[in-house]
Structures are given as C-alpha cells and as structure tokens.
Length: 200
Image (cartoon, rainbow, N blue to C red; front, side, top):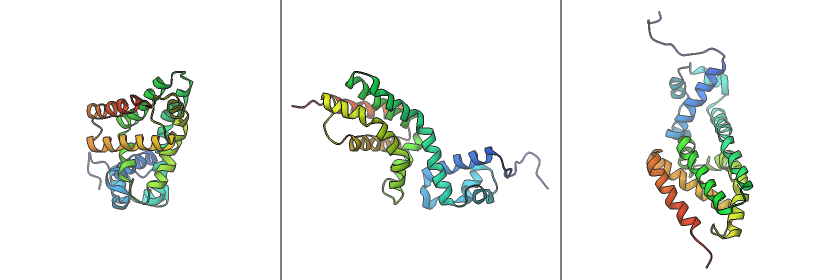
C-alpha cells in the first residue's frame, strides 16, 4: 500500500529520469569521488529505482562517463566565450577577460571546479583533463599566446599556464566552498600578480 503524501521512486522511461540521475551522480561523484559513490545512493538522491541506473547507463563507470559528457556540454558557453576573446585587439584586456571567464566557471559552476581538483591525484584525472579541461584550454591558447608576446603575461607554455590557472581556481573553489567574495579576492590577487609582471 502506498503511503499518502509519500513519493515513491520514479521508474518511468522519460528524459527527466535520466537528467535526475545525471544531476545526482554529478553531486555524488564530486563530493565523494568515484570509488566511494554508490549507484544506490545516486538513485536515492534522484528518487528513482536503483535498477534504473543500469537500465539507463549500464554501469557506474558508464554513468560517470555520461556525467563528464554532460559537464562538457555545460562548459560550451565558456569555451565559446574564451575563443571569441581573440577578437579583442587589446592583449591585456583580453587576458584579463579570460581570467574572468575562468573565475566565472568557479562561481557559477562550482562543482565542475571541485571535481577537477578532487580527482586531480586519482587515476581518473587524465580523462577529466581530456574531456573537461582540454577543450577550454585549446580555445583559450591564442589569447594567452598573444598576451605573452605583448609582455602582459609571463612567458612560457600557454597550455601549461592555462592548466595551472584552472587548477588554482579549482583549488580555491574547493577550499572556500564556492564563496563568491573569497574566490574573487583570490582570483584578483592572482590576476594582478600575473598581468602586472613585465619582462625586465
């Protein structure tokens, strides 16, 4: 007998079930890591029957990969914005704008940054970098290269510089829990240190 007012788990084959599982899995994988996250807990958080995880995705591994693809989709607007910054003729203004884009990812999508940082020393770090971080890095490299040539950004490997910037923001988001004020203060300090350095 169903208890009045108590919702049972969803099991219908609709898009909402898939989205609910992806959202719940994203949170579980972010806060608990792949190894400690369980499909049972993910299903409970999504309010679906546990069998729906295997039905929809096949396995926990496949669900994790689907989460990464979903994160990649969420990142598209930021990737596009970073790519378009090269159209700004001012190298210093565009590199500062790029830093703001990286910061906004941390503020607006803190779980993305937290997952990047929390998995950075695990065997899954490489696939996270390739799936989530690299597309953004590739889109932003021309902006960093131009800033380096103009002297408003330290010389070096532009891809490595971007990976380090993203790692720094990811660590700050994790440490401050996505606190907007603290995060912006740390990012502003980092930005000043980088863009105010000039070749001797």
